Image (tube, rainbow, N blue to C red; front, side, top):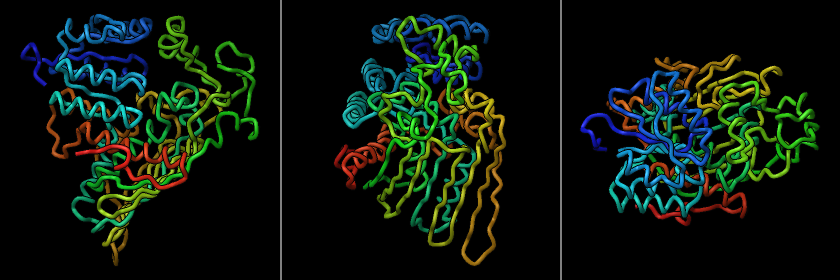
Length: 442
């Protein structure tokens, strides 16, 4: 990255939904000495106007706005150094490739893209242009995950034989993926790509290994039209102005959330997008219950399970090795209260709001022949993905040094994506999938 001005790098954001807000605030509030926000691009003018109004609340002037169709022209006119891609997942490759071909570097939200051909297109463009593409895998920056990396790298459990990884999305956060565009697999790649790419990247990073083969089973069990079988169905398409949604704990009430109202409800006239679909309405094409068995280049295996309809939210990771076992357990919320069920958990807005329920985190090393050791971790917080968001933006935008070298490259993004893509294919075929059959990496 070489700023045109010789000083601060010039950033433009494409995609101004809720996912952009954390990045925008970090740029203008926390890293204004090294970074300058110069433009927004989106298909929806009302959403860009909302972000511009929020900028003024932070004491920052409004920035020029461009329709997404004028993206390339924006890059030249605003002399952009780095593009932040926070658009709908299936569109990432369009903006990433256009940006690097225009001489810009890119920071893109995960997942890097949604399928193998789009991934190959990005990798080819990076090789051709020599520009840098960084995938915003913020979980690498969580202090708990940092400590796991250190312990495993130092050989705390010896040679790693296997990993068991369970991720639970509760009936508030999990439901939110079935209200919005993520419910369409063609747009998001499903939760194996959109959500689990975070987790698959962590395993690649912890093991310093690459996935070789994936066997998986997944289905839509709880949401979609299954709601009728389970007794949760209500007869409405979207919650706003629908009396049938009044007593539905799964209904998102946009009008009660000022920022969401401005960003989505008030912006509907521009593109017709409904942020508050009925999670039990027809049209869901993603899974909500998924099991994966993966093998890695080191010979290690991983069993992984993602449940999107749990009563509590959190995750468990167990790493088994030749000298013992390392266990991480994180409770992000221990239950969902009826009053909060129709709201948004902070994680649904990238950790910007604190959860009201109880939570805890423990990291335990269990060596052979010795009592278990509770590992204390400094810096962990229940806000901002365990403190990861602020740590990540310090590296990406503030020039902070990073001895763990956590900034994920386009190749890292592809490797995380490949496990999910192979899982999706295995869902369809019922057979194991070799990741080399999906994409060729150097």
